Image 1 (cartoon, rainbow, N blue to C red):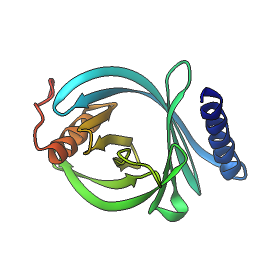
Image 2 (cartoon, one colour; image 1 turned 90 degrees about the vertical axis):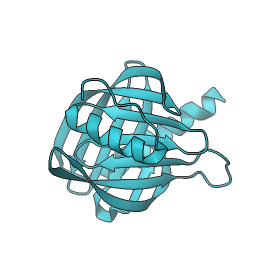
Image 3 (spheres, rainbow, N blue to C red; image 1 turned 60 degrees about the horizontal axis):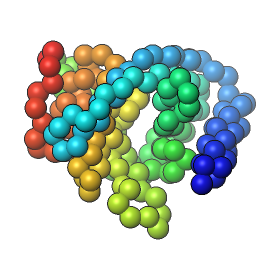
Image 4 (cartoon, helix red, strand yellow; image 1 turned 30 degrees about the vertical axis):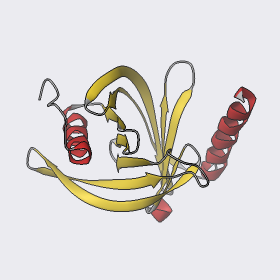
Length: 174
């Protein structure tokens, strides 16, 4: 099983490399984020990740990793904004919605992650091109993760999660 997972990750990384090998990279950004994992409205775990953002004319790749391994890869192909790939699974766009933080509007795209012929793995992925993933939400399991790098991402994640779960305590520091 571990070998199959490793082969799958290597194929994903290779396919992303091949997709962008002919691209001229315009931007390569690395930043630290905090991921908060919730069960319903209770914080279960917080941890830090590094996000590498690689952008060029045709693709944007967001690589979420810790020191030891790549934990999540989320990529957007700019050529077709309605298609995203999350851990090598094609996701469809559900909606584009504007959220307001301090009188500034942020357009957030919601994608549906759904592995064919699988049950109970569906996720809603809330994404902003500048910030990457904001919230990962599983309605079935009442699990969610927020991806926070600054005040704006913390507020956007709070508003999105509150809208999804209808119950969320106000985070500290806001």
